[in-house]
Amino acid sequence: MDTLIEQLSDSVSSAKTLEDLTRPMLEMLEVVTGLESTYLTTIDLDKGLQHILFARNARQLTIPEGLSVPWSDTLCRRALEEGRTYTDDVANCWGDSDAARQLGIQTYVSTPVKTDSGGLFGTLCAASAVRLPLSSRAESVLQLFARLIGQQVERELLFVKLKKANTELAAYASTDALTGLANRRSLIEALRRMLAQGAQDGHWVLVGFIDLDGFKQINDAHGHDAGDEFLAAMAARLSTSLRANDMLARFGGDEFVVIGPGPALGEAPTGAARALEARVAASTVSELKLHRATVRYEGASVGVVAVDPRAASAEEALRKADDAMYEVKRSRRAAARETSSV
Image (tube, rainbow, N blue to C red; front, side, top):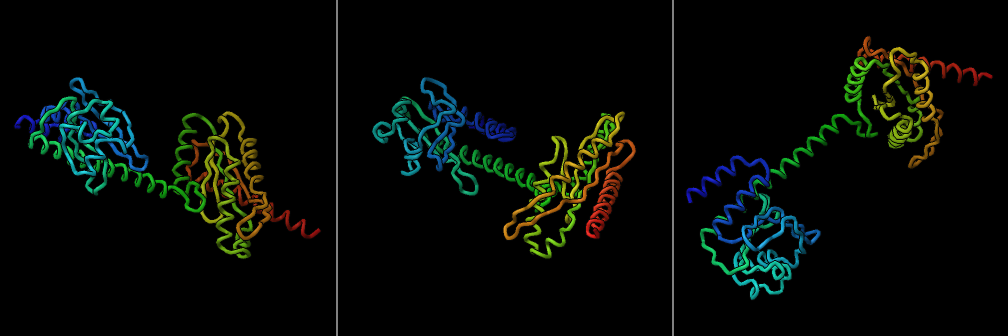
């Protein structure tokens, strides 16, 4: 018994995963019960399946690891429903189980593995092709191992939940909730990385500022819900104008920013900047069918600049793009006044 306790202590203290913990326990369980196969199962009640997760087969009887069988046919289901832990006469006790008959199981012992929250994870089992007695000591060890495995499962489930929550929190912190685009904070971080990469690789960085002219009028005419719907729809349209390595972000309100790599520093960047500017601007000219209104939109003011990554910070690059956008906005307003005066 002292040797078993020492082995168990070593296994529990060194185990980092469920498999690390379970495999030594299956070996110890074989020694304690005298049964030739020991195994841990998982149960999927929704799919009606029981799966052999880990198995140890010491002699003739083989419980295949990875085997999945219908839950309705298993000895484990019968044992759970009847509250029976052990039998050495499976054929007479549960002769209607095809799986037990095919595997040749005569002696069977099983206990449920539950998490601390009470959920059924699976079963810890031992089986043999011959009839063998089960000592009270062996039954106690089986239940102890099941509790320890259940606690490990709970820890791993908690880790998965925490990892998912951290991922969601990180996404929330870096994403604009309305449009699903990167937010301002995420944009600035990405732009800093792009500038650093541009300086290292030797290429310009294109930065474009986008202002949705007339958005206030849309809000005033159709309401804030329609305004939000318009922003989300426009974000989707802007996304269609991007190249593979471009990034689009909502800067705030009705302002968006696009960034992307430009040509090599030895090449003139003006053509690439104007091409991106034209492509983005064209994507904003549309007739959007919103939930309660149809909005005919004449297009946004878009200003794109090519930034030398060796000579500008992210904040400076954004200011240059903002200035370029306002130049475009002034030109559009002047053109509109000339048209209206004719």
